[in-house]
Amino acid sequence: MKSCSPIRTGIHALVSVAVICVCACTASAGYFSSGNVIGSPLPGEANLYGDATWHDRAFWLTHNGQFQEGSVILDDLDPGLPVASFWMDVMLYIGNGDTMGGDGLSFCFGDLPAAGFGEKGAGSGLCVMLDTFENWDDPDDHYSRIRVTYGGVFVAESDWIDLRPMISEYVWNDEYGYEELIHEPQWFPLAVGVDETGEVLVLGPGLYAEVLGQIDDWNPQPGWQFGLGARSGWYTDIHGVWDLTIETVPVPEPASMVLLAAGGLALIRRRRTA
Image (cartoon, rainbow, N blue to C red; front, side, top):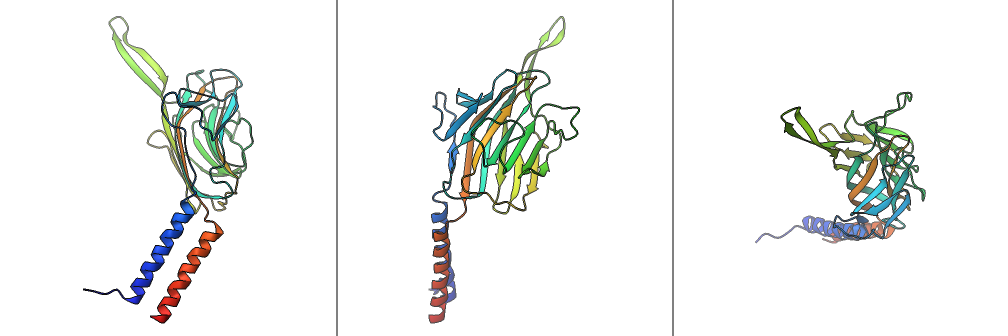
């Protein structure tokens, strides 16, 4: 029977301490799920502003009307702790309004105001913007693209993609040929993640809807919140948010770091006396 060397035993001890520390650090990790069960009540952590409502297990940020603006903003998922990294998944509904569309939706993480906001986002943190109205006279227009900013500074942007995907169904008509029977908006997925180094990954609808960027000064602050907002102007759209899930990993508390350092010191002492 083989025996473990003092060094290997020490490494095992350090790994065990590290695992305990990681568990202690992530025990308070934030989590939110809006649920997808019909009849579910408004989640307690969700706050609605502006024209936003909750029904049919979804947040409806705007309805089919002009000059609307609404948002859902979540309570701080990690009270007292800054977030090191997070992952967000959601299903979005944009459409059923005017042919031109308007105006878009954004996902934000930062110091958000207790108010509705639109496709340009809010706060001084991370914003993922989905602009669905083409402003011909605006040289800074980002129509039908997913654009990422941090602190108001550009990070990355997708190629042109369809942010108002539709479901179409046709039937054969002996007199006119194929006739469109159904033409309505389609729910589509959006995922956003940022790791502890500030690398950003956004996955949207379609083959070319991947955005990858780097935030060099990624430094979320305690109290930052997650939120989604949408807006309509002269032209309208319905903006829906369904099956929203967010998972966070907070920055370790100082006590956890002290525990890890103590484990390392114990390992050194064990090796010296072995």
